[in-house]
Image (cartoon, rainbow, N blue to C red; front, side):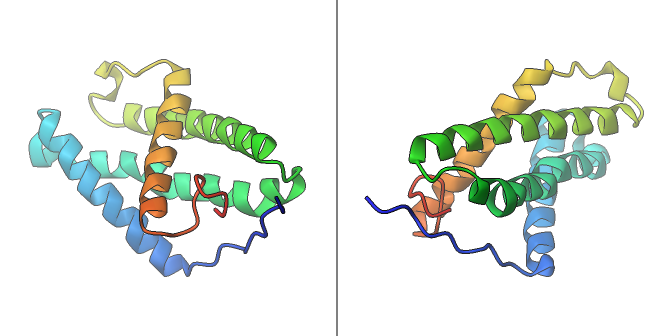
Length: 146
């Protein structure tokens, strides 16, 4: 089996911003609705969700552009490195969300999860995102092209 050839990811910043902000607005609305705060918490929830949506985009881009090209092309090594990178990125993003949340009134009363939960949650989010890419026939983690 020949090693995959990877194309650099190219997306205009405007498209990235539109997509990640739209995700944050929609998920922020859902979170605020079901957390009991209603529309009053929507802006803060949206701000917090920007961490995994926009920040997560850059975690993935860092892997694709800088880390992956420097690793052996074997699927096992690439996959293991990607999971480790997602975990580490998820921990950083989760802690940033927590610190941001604590800066707002009531943020210190929230029961934030253990740090490692952030890493596992980010891996799940990335796998869900890559499932969508796979189902649409685009390059993804699952087909080895993305």
